[in-house]
Length: 295
Image 1 (spheres, rainbow, N blue to C red):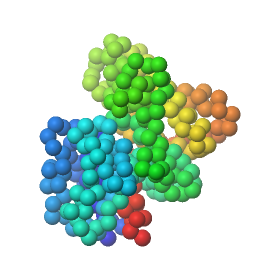
Image 2: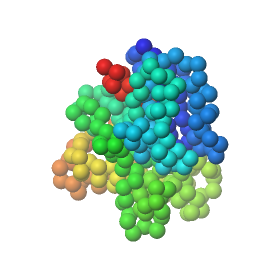
Image 3: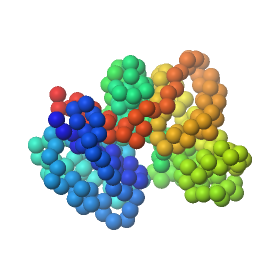
Image 4: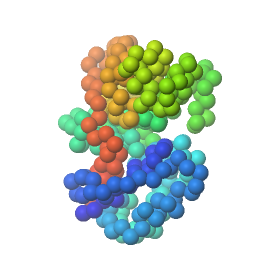
């Protein structure tokens, strides 16, 4: 059984075919950070494929009931009818839509770092910040499919920083990779343009780079603790490009997280794991979900 999986993110759309064991058979990607219309290129990439199931993991917000997506960081896709478009291309293949971070959480819970855990929060720290929930062993979507979209909850409502979503003080304005880099530049760091370069500078002892990563990781610690407080969860799996930086990011994050969660009173023991499935997690989660809805 062949599953077509799409992982729609802020900078790229990954497309893959997975087998019944959720192993990637082939994979390609197209840019989503362009001014040209995205769908025609994506449609061309899909033409001629033969698939049995389709799973879509998309950045939010999404509307599962309508089959539409409106990713904050893809301005040209507002209420884009992704499910109906794919139904037209593949009329015999069931299509399942879920949030990209919900897909990551589901994949990590079934095949990655969260195996054997009934309740967990999955977190992606990359171009954006996202979360996904597994409750009682199943993906929790919420009413529209946007549960745990905690990158756009405010951790500083008096902040002057306006998020791309239009609110002020969103977690993303402090903790996503590009914003950490932007803050480093405001401090005078000038050794690169992306988080990879910033992490390299921090490892080399650059104080400005270290300070920027410290601030971003503290913001994430606050955001995650807020979710754990609301949901009473005790397992967190963290993935995404920023988290792949290793100890230079994880050490300040865990230091801040231990302080933040200590104030809750009931979060005495929380397991925090790095994600295992890395860049394939969204695709695998989409495949898992596609098989679920086809049962």
